[in-house]
Length: 189
Length: 304
Image (cartoon, rainbow over all chains, first blue to last red):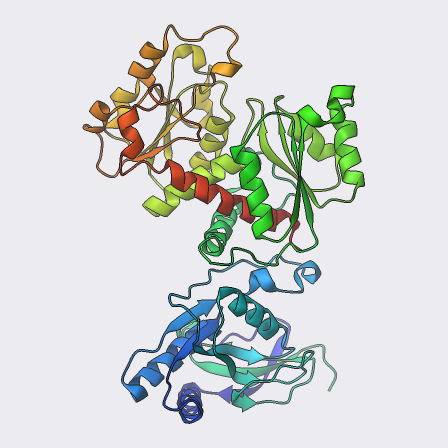
């Protein structure tokens, strides 16, 4: 678990067990609210939402007994802040191997913050077809929305300050499952 | 990320920068497979195609690439321009820049013209082919196509056949391929082979037939008859015999040999007609990949 330079660890928000339980609970909520998962499809936002979406799809398949369509969305080409960044972001590949037409899409991301990523993701999804509905699932909601966008399924709500950051580590990408709250070292208090 | 503001030559780029562009192009290619082949990335940006030499394929490819990214693309061709009224290259380019554009794509018959404009202009300048110097986006799309089909360039044996001395495609291919670890062999008549070409890290062979058996890829260059004031080889038939590729030679080649050509092909000269339908001919893949690669270049130089 690497705390990035300039930050100190404040709190561990999830360990591997609690993360797994959280994902299971979220999938059950989805089942309840979607009449047994009919027409459901998962689309995860790179780079970590896609990993969480894959885990949810697996849990969902276990619960309903059939495979659930799974895709990965890269939103770089839809960002509204390209001109504000110091470093040009690397464009990842969008891989959605099914038609989203008529599907009840569950969009998955690791952390929701300003809501701008989700705005970009909604535009990107709409360019790929006309889903019947789109719902949003996030592992952590850290508040501070700048757009009128709210998640439908939340793993955990964590009130944060602007000097804090929520970091999600996943074993497929980072070698371990963990969610931590960190604070900038130069922050007051 | 690219260090420079312009794309003038693959000779200027590091291996990492080339790989960055190839990876970005990989993502761009997915956009081309959608029903709605457009993303909003360059909305509000303007790209001018400034072509002082005729071109259909490259100009169209840049135009489509810009439009797929939602940029406004304008075409300016020398025949209809004030160049015919004697305006200089620099004045023409600076006037276009003064109309507040975000990038200029330039093709010019003089080697070095694009580097000159890159120095003169504030906006990013992209080389779409300058004389016998470089054609970097063609080099990138060739390398992209090889990587797409073969996975990696490392240790791959690639032959480039034709007029090596006058070919900007050959130069961009050589710089890019050598940087990514391919083993490049150039083939061509002695009159079309620059002296000391080995200094670029390539080996030289005297006929396609001689090397085709051991190659993973052959890139056949177009004989540019319109560029030759005095012929550099005795006859087309003889050229085709030594520096073209035909079905007979393919029997000796690997089953996985990739056959490439920057187009337009002189059928019966560089490639015999039966090669047109050969399953390992990836000439049209090159054209599709050209759009993806140019989207990547526009993104890298203009977005953000």
